[in-house]
Amino acid sequence: MKQDKFLLGILIFIGLLVVLSLALFFTRDRPQPVADDTPEGVVYNYLLALQEKDYERAYAYLADEPGKPSRGAFEQYYRYNVDFSLLAVEVGAGRILGESAEVEVVITRLSSDPFGRSWEENGIAFLTRQDGAWKIRGLPWQFWQWDWYQEP
Image (cartoon, rainbow, N blue to C red; front, top):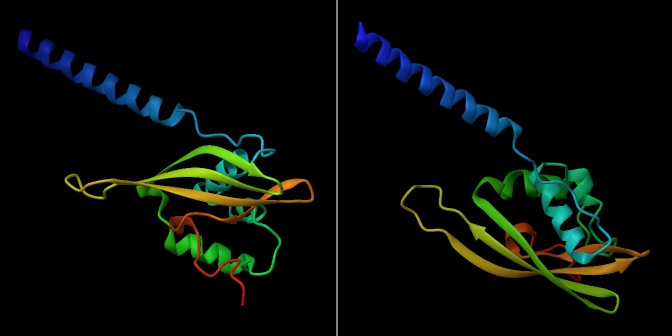
């Protein structure tokens, strides 16, 4: 009889841990967009929109210049070529150079297996000011098709 109560207590404790874990998982804070009046904010919001698969919002952050991809090509590229489940991105400091800007981006590629190695790479996002707003002209290769914004 004592063993049954002890076992029941352990099972109840495990059940409470499972419920608590699920509650914490489903109520955790999701990343929120920031003000996009700085180059850093634009890059952050662009990457967040891509992660959330909000391609329309992400596409709006691209510069309106020759070489801009079509909306369909843009969405298709991100839908099939970029896996955000294995990438962690940190947006660093920005540097404004007149009507253009550069923002540091640190990309960490996570391993897909438990014994694999992760790697980290530094890159630069390039932006230009158009109609008073910062627009993206280029990102590190993990997030950018090689022929976007290239001169013909």
